Amino acid sequence: MKFVDEARIEVAGGKGGNGVASFRREKFIPKGGPDGGDGGRGGNVYAVADCNINTLIDYRYARKHFAKNGENGRGADCYGAAGNDIELRMPVGTLVTDADTGELIADLTRHGERYLIAKGGKGGLGNLHFKSSTNRAPRQCTPGEEGEHRFLNLELKVLADVGLLGMPNAGKSTFISAVSNARPKIADYPFTTLHPQLGVVRVGPEQSFVVADIPGLIEGASEGAGLGHLFLRHLSRTQLLLHLIDMAPFDPDVDPVREAKALVEELRKYDQALYEKPRWVVLNKIDLVAPEEQDARIEALIEGLDLTHEDRVFVISAATREGCEELIHAVAQYLEEQKRLQSQYLDDERIEPQEQGVEEVRLSAQ
Image 1: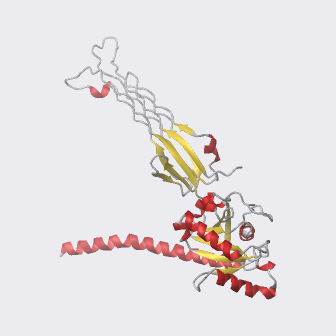
Image 2: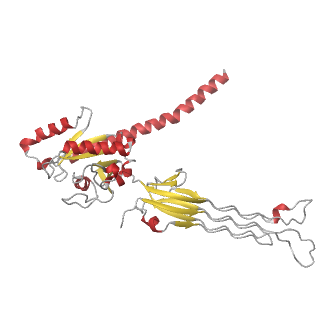
């Protein structure tokens, strides 16, 4: 199936049904009075997160989604039926924004989340509502309101804990297949990965995290070169980036240090927030370097990348899985620490207002 992570759609809630002006007409009952019912409300349009869907391809071709109109009111105090609602099922991780204003309408981050994206119009009032002691035969009624009409942009950002960065053929696909359940295409030519791949890494019986692999970046990606810039949005929700560097490129003229710095620069040009995310350096393909040259090659790369003692550096071989176990355990430990800090922060936010409230009560009592 073709991977589609952007779409533009048109949605509209249904029009409300019209109210009706009607009077009771029965034999032997003179002056029966008004009995016109209200119109039914128009149908609503909802966006629903569904974990069984992983692409927006359905909305690339079906662009218009209009809910049904409400029925008109009728006599004998009969109200019109409401229009049927429609649900648009979208992948988890989809952002729904207004195409005209840029307003964020929905952020679908959990399976089953449901957001109203186009409200149906209210039904009109029948003349039953306008009767009074001075107006016993009202002929007023109101029409139904139009439903909300919008053009929406859909943007899919996959949900992952860790994102992989690297030039084409850096070994990202081999790495994700070595440590997770993902099975991407692997070949000895650039751009074998054409769309994001997700893999679940099992660290223990009850501990796991999700890794996202995107197509490789090349220099000039921010100006449209290559494929990776199209999918960088999928790394925006990650907590940690792993920058894979090829220690033994096929072309001897290729400088891994220059390529690594160029990739980081492309990241900065694309999004400053993504550039500032924690980023660990992973030197890959150590198995292709002669044992007597490994230490010198590692030292040269670290020196060329201007890394400090605070930077995390791992040396692995995704093909032979050398060093992969140590890396995934370090990632799992980091994510667990971030989760604990976040939980502690939320607890502090909840406790602080309560403590202030107690102090205020004490002061007022004094």
